[in-house]
Image (cartoon, rainbow, N blue to C red; front, side, top):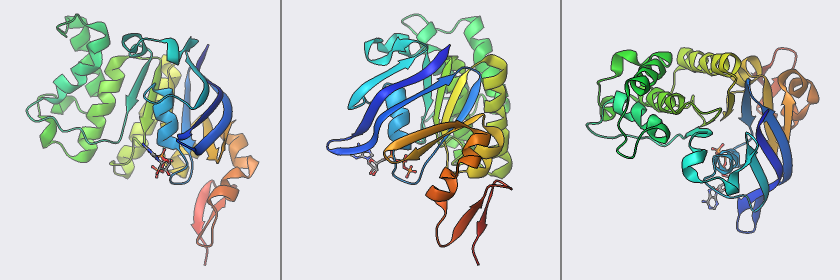
Length: 254
Ligand SMILES: Nc1ncnc2c1ncn2[C@@H]1O[C@H](COP(=O)(O)OP(=O)(O)OP(=O)(O)O)[C@@H](O)[C@H]1O
Protein backbone atom coordinates (compact mmCIF):
# COMPACT_ATOMS: atom_id res chain seq x y z
CA UNK A 1 0.00 0.00 0.00
CA UNK A 2 1.17 3.54 -0.64
CA UNK A 3 1.76 5.16 2.73
CA UNK A 4 2.35 8.75 1.61
CA UNK A 5 0.90 10.07 -1.61
CA UNK A 6 1.32 13.65 -2.77
CA UNK A 7 -1.20 14.49 -5.47
CA UNK A 8 -0.32 17.61 -7.44
CA UNK A 9 0.43 19.61 -4.32
CA UNK A 10 1.59 23.19 -4.24
CA UNK A 11 2.92 24.48 -0.94
CA UNK A 12 4.13 27.88 0.18
CA UNK A 13 3.21 30.95 2.15
CA UNK A 14 0.91 33.63 0.71
CA UNK A 15 2.18 34.38 -2.80
CA UNK A 16 5.50 32.59 -2.22
CA UNK A 17 5.45 29.12 -3.77
CA UNK A 18 8.02 26.62 -2.45
CA UNK A 19 6.89 23.46 -4.25
CA UNK A 20 4.59 23.51 -7.27
CA UNK A 21 2.40 20.72 -8.65
CA UNK A 22 4.40 17.97 -6.96
CA UNK A 23 3.25 14.35 -7.18
CA UNK A 24 5.11 11.53 -5.44
CA UNK A 25 4.41 8.28 -3.62
CA UNK A 26 6.26 6.46 -0.84
CA UNK A 27 5.39 2.92 0.17
CA UNK A 28 5.73 1.14 3.50
CA UNK A 29 8.99 -0.47 4.58
CA UNK A 30 11.00 2.47 3.25
CA UNK A 31 13.41 4.90 4.88
CA UNK A 32 13.41 8.08 2.81
CA UNK A 33 15.55 11.19 3.32
CA UNK A 34 14.32 14.65 2.37
CA UNK A 35 17.19 16.82 1.15
CA UNK A 36 17.32 20.41 -0.04
CA UNK A 37 19.19 23.64 0.46
CA UNK A 38 18.30 25.90 3.41
CA UNK A 39 14.89 27.53 3.10
CA UNK A 40 13.67 25.37 0.21
CA UNK A 41 10.69 24.01 2.15
CA UNK A 42 11.67 20.74 3.85
CA UNK A 43 9.98 21.59 7.17
CA UNK A 44 7.00 23.07 5.36
CA UNK A 45 6.54 19.90 3.33
CA UNK A 46 6.80 17.68 6.42
CA UNK A 47 4.28 19.89 8.25
CA UNK A 48 1.90 19.54 5.31
CA UNK A 49 2.26 15.73 5.32
CA UNK A 50 1.69 15.74 9.10
CA UNK A 51 -1.57 17.62 8.54
CA UNK A 52 -0.38 20.73 10.37
CA UNK A 53 -0.55 23.03 7.35
CA UNK A 54 -2.80 22.63 4.34
CA UNK A 55 -1.20 22.73 0.88
CA UNK A 56 -2.16 25.74 -1.25
CA UNK A 57 -3.61 23.22 -3.70
CA UNK A 58 -3.62 19.50 -4.35
CA UNK A 59 -4.21 16.62 -1.96
CA UNK A 60 -2.23 14.38 0.38
CA UNK A 61 -3.22 10.81 1.15
CA UNK A 62 -1.82 8.81 4.04
CA UNK A 63 -2.43 5.06 3.85
CA UNK A 64 -5.12 5.79 1.29
CA UNK A 65 -6.99 8.36 3.39
CA UNK A 66 -7.31 11.95 2.27
CA UNK A 67 -5.62 14.02 4.94
CA UNK A 68 -8.01 16.98 4.70
CA UNK A 69 -10.97 14.65 5.34
CA UNK A 70 -9.46 12.76 8.30
CA UNK A 71 -10.31 13.89 11.86
CA UNK A 72 -7.30 14.71 14.06
CA UNK A 73 -7.80 11.82 16.48
CA UNK A 74 -7.83 9.33 13.59
CA UNK A 75 -4.83 10.99 11.97
CA UNK A 76 -2.91 10.47 15.22
CA UNK A 77 -3.10 6.73 14.60
CA UNK A 78 -1.66 7.10 11.10
CA UNK A 79 1.14 9.66 11.38
CA UNK A 80 3.55 10.84 14.08
CA UNK A 81 5.86 13.83 13.76
CA UNK A 82 9.09 14.66 15.58
CA UNK A 83 10.11 18.30 15.21
CA UNK A 84 13.33 20.05 16.19
CA UNK A 85 11.54 22.15 18.82
CA UNK A 86 13.12 21.70 22.19
CA UNK A 87 10.51 20.22 24.44
CA UNK A 88 11.41 20.65 28.07
CA UNK A 89 8.62 19.80 30.47
CA UNK A 90 9.76 20.34 34.06
CA UNK A 91 9.09 17.49 36.46
CA UNK A 92 7.67 15.22 33.79
CA UNK A 93 9.72 12.04 33.58
CA UNK A 94 10.90 10.77 30.19
CA UNK A 95 8.62 7.74 30.60
CA UNK A 96 5.58 10.03 30.98
CA UNK A 97 6.55 12.09 27.93
CA UNK A 98 6.82 8.90 25.88
CA UNK A 99 3.49 7.81 27.41
CA UNK A 100 1.86 10.84 25.73
CA UNK A 101 2.47 9.00 22.47
CA UNK A 102 -0.15 6.47 23.57
CA UNK A 103 -2.86 9.19 23.74
CA UNK A 104 -4.60 8.06 20.51
CA UNK A 105 -5.22 4.65 22.11
CA UNK A 106 -6.12 5.48 25.71
CA UNK A 107 -9.43 6.43 27.34
CA UNK A 108 -10.40 10.07 27.83
CA UNK A 109 -8.43 10.25 31.08
CA UNK A 110 -5.29 9.17 29.26
CA UNK A 111 -4.80 6.15 31.55
CA UNK A 112 -2.15 3.75 30.35
CA UNK A 113 -2.90 0.04 30.48
CA UNK A 114 -0.18 -2.56 31.02
CA UNK A 115 0.07 -3.07 27.24
CA UNK A 116 0.65 0.68 26.76
CA UNK A 117 3.37 0.69 29.42
CA UNK A 118 5.13 -2.17 27.67
CA UNK A 119 5.06 -0.19 24.40
CA UNK A 120 6.51 2.85 26.21
CA UNK A 121 9.34 0.84 27.78
CA UNK A 122 10.14 -0.81 24.45
CA UNK A 123 10.26 2.59 22.70
CA UNK A 124 12.62 4.00 25.35
CA UNK A 125 14.87 0.95 25.07
CA UNK A 126 14.91 1.13 21.28
CA UNK A 127 16.39 4.63 21.36
CA UNK A 128 18.81 3.66 24.12
CA UNK A 129 17.05 5.73 26.80
CA UNK A 130 15.76 2.91 29.02
CA UNK A 131 18.06 4.02 31.83
CA UNK A 132 16.63 7.55 31.71
CA UNK A 133 12.96 6.60 32.13
CA UNK A 134 12.57 8.30 35.51
CA UNK A 135 14.67 11.36 34.72
CA UNK A 136 12.74 14.63 34.21
CA UNK A 137 12.85 16.01 30.66
CA UNK A 138 14.29 19.35 31.77
CA UNK A 139 17.41 17.60 33.08
CA UNK A 140 18.31 15.87 29.83
CA UNK A 141 20.91 16.97 27.32
CA UNK A 142 19.68 18.09 23.88
CA UNK A 143 20.62 14.74 22.34
CA UNK A 144 18.93 12.76 25.12
CA UNK A 145 15.78 14.88 24.89
CA UNK A 146 15.71 14.37 21.13
CA UNK A 147 15.85 10.61 21.58
CA UNK A 148 12.98 10.75 24.09
CA UNK A 149 10.89 12.66 21.55
CA UNK A 150 11.67 9.99 18.96
CA UNK A 151 10.62 7.33 21.49
CA UNK A 152 7.34 9.23 21.91
CA UNK A 153 6.75 8.95 18.15
CA UNK A 154 7.63 5.23 18.24
CA UNK A 155 5.16 4.70 21.10
CA UNK A 156 2.48 6.32 18.95
CA UNK A 157 2.96 3.27 16.71
CA UNK A 158 1.88 4.80 13.41
CA UNK A 159 2.54 3.42 9.91
CA UNK A 160 3.98 6.81 8.88
CA UNK A 161 6.69 8.55 10.94
CA UNK A 162 7.94 12.01 9.98
CA UNK A 163 11.03 13.57 11.53
CA UNK A 164 12.40 17.06 10.93
CA UNK A 165 16.19 16.96 11.22
CA UNK A 166 16.20 14.16 13.82
CA UNK A 167 20.00 14.06 13.98
CA UNK A 168 20.43 17.79 14.61
CA UNK A 169 21.45 17.49 18.28
CA UNK A 170 23.21 14.13 18.11
CA UNK A 171 26.91 13.38 18.03
CA UNK A 172 28.35 11.39 15.15
CA UNK A 173 28.01 7.83 16.52
CA UNK A 174 24.48 8.60 17.71
CA UNK A 175 23.53 10.01 14.29
CA UNK A 176 24.41 6.76 12.60
CA UNK A 177 22.88 4.70 15.39
CA UNK A 178 19.60 6.59 15.17
CA UNK A 179 19.41 6.34 11.39
CA UNK A 180 20.25 2.64 11.54
CA UNK A 181 17.41 2.23 14.04
CA UNK A 182 15.03 4.14 11.73
CA UNK A 183 16.12 1.92 8.84
CA UNK A 184 15.47 -1.21 10.90
CA UNK A 185 12.02 0.02 11.94
CA UNK A 186 11.15 0.77 8.33
CA UNK A 187 12.36 -2.59 7.04
CA UNK A 188 11.30 -4.88 9.90
CA UNK A 189 8.00 -3.23 10.82
CA UNK A 190 6.96 -1.99 7.39
CA UNK A 191 6.79 1.64 8.44
CA UNK A 192 7.24 4.55 6.08
CA UNK A 193 9.85 6.83 7.67
CA UNK A 194 10.42 10.18 5.99
CA UNK A 195 12.93 12.58 7.52
CA UNK A 196 14.65 15.81 6.57
CA UNK A 197 18.39 16.07 6.94
CA UNK A 198 21.42 18.04 5.80
CA UNK A 199 23.61 14.95 6.08
CA UNK A 200 24.27 13.73 2.59
CA UNK A 201 26.45 10.83 3.72
CA UNK A 202 23.76 9.39 5.99
CA UNK A 203 21.06 9.89 3.38
CA UNK A 204 23.10 8.24 0.65
CA UNK A 205 24.38 5.30 2.66
CA UNK A 206 21.37 4.33 4.80
CA UNK A 207 18.22 5.41 2.95
CA UNK A 208 16.23 3.43 0.41
CA UNK A 209 15.25 6.54 -1.49
CA UNK A 210 15.95 10.25 -1.48
CA UNK A 211 13.50 13.10 -2.04
CA UNK A 212 15.37 16.18 -3.20
CA UNK A 213 13.87 19.65 -3.39
CA UNK A 214 14.87 21.37 -6.63
CA UNK A 215 12.65 24.43 -6.28
CA UNK A 216 9.81 24.33 -7.17
CA UNK A 217 10.07 20.62 -8.02
CA UNK A 218 10.67 17.49 -5.93
CA UNK A 219 12.69 14.57 -7.28
CA UNK A 220 12.01 11.26 -5.53
CA UNK A 221 14.35 8.46 -6.63
CA UNK A 222 15.87 5.25 -5.23
CA UNK A 223 19.19 6.28 -3.63
CA UNK A 224 21.46 4.79 -6.32
CA UNK A 225 19.47 6.45 -9.07
CA UNK A 226 19.59 9.77 -7.21
CA UNK A 227 23.39 9.52 -6.99
CA UNK A 228 23.65 8.86 -10.74
CA UNK A 229 21.10 11.53 -11.66
CA UNK A 230 23.46 14.50 -11.31
CA UNK A 231 20.85 16.44 -9.30
CA UNK A 232 22.99 16.42 -6.15
CA UNK A 233 26.05 17.97 -7.81
CA UNK A 234 23.90 20.54 -9.56
CA UNK A 235 22.16 21.65 -6.37
CA UNK A 236 24.94 21.35 -3.79
CA UNK A 237 28.24 22.03 -5.57
CA UNK A 238 29.58 25.53 -5.24
CA UNK A 239 32.95 27.26 -5.23
CA UNK A 240 33.86 25.65 -1.89
CA UNK A 241 32.59 22.06 -2.00
CA UNK A 242 32.03 19.41 -4.63
CA UNK A 243 30.06 16.14 -4.50
CA UNK A 244 31.88 13.04 -5.72
CA UNK A 245 29.25 10.55 -6.90
CA UNK A 246 31.72 7.65 -7.07
CA UNK A 247 32.52 7.84 -3.33
CA UNK A 248 29.21 9.46 -2.26
CA UNK A 249 31.18 12.08 -0.36
CA UNK A 250 31.66 15.80 -0.33
CA UNK A 251 35.15 17.19 -0.83
CA UNK A 252 36.49 20.69 -0.31
CA UNK A 253 37.80 22.33 -3.46
CA UNK A 254 41.38 23.54 -3.17
N1 LIG B 1 5.09 30.54 8.83
C1 LIG B 1 5.76 31.03 7.78
N2 LIG B 1 5.32 32.12 7.13
C2 LIG B 1 5.96 32.62 6.03
N3 LIG B 1 7.12 32.10 5.54
C3 LIG B 1 7.61 31.02 6.17
C4 LIG B 1 6.98 30.43 7.32
N4 LIG B 1 7.70 29.36 7.71
C5 LIG B 1 8.76 29.29 6.86
N5 LIG B 1 8.70 30.28 5.95
C6 LIG B 1 9.65 30.50 4.84
O1 LIG B 1 9.48 29.44 3.91
C7 LIG B 1 10.74 28.99 3.42
C8 LIG B 1 10.91 27.51 3.67
O2 LIG B 1 11.05 27.29 5.09
P1 LIG B 1 11.33 25.84 5.67
O3 LIG B 1 11.53 26.01 7.12
O4 LIG B 1 10.24 24.93 5.21
O5 LIG B 1 12.68 25.47 4.92
P2 LIG B 1 13.73 24.29 5.21
O6 LIG B 1 14.05 23.68 3.88
O7 LIG B 1 13.19 23.39 6.27
O8 LIG B 1 14.97 25.14 5.72
P3 LIG B 1 16.26 24.75 6.64
O9 LIG B 1 17.09 23.79 5.84
O10 LIG B 1 16.94 26.08 6.77
O11 LIG B 1 15.75 24.20 7.94
C9 LIG B 1 11.80 29.86 4.10
O12 LIG B 1 12.21 30.88 3.21
C10 LIG B 1 11.09 30.42 5.30
O13 LIG B 1 11.59 31.71 5.62
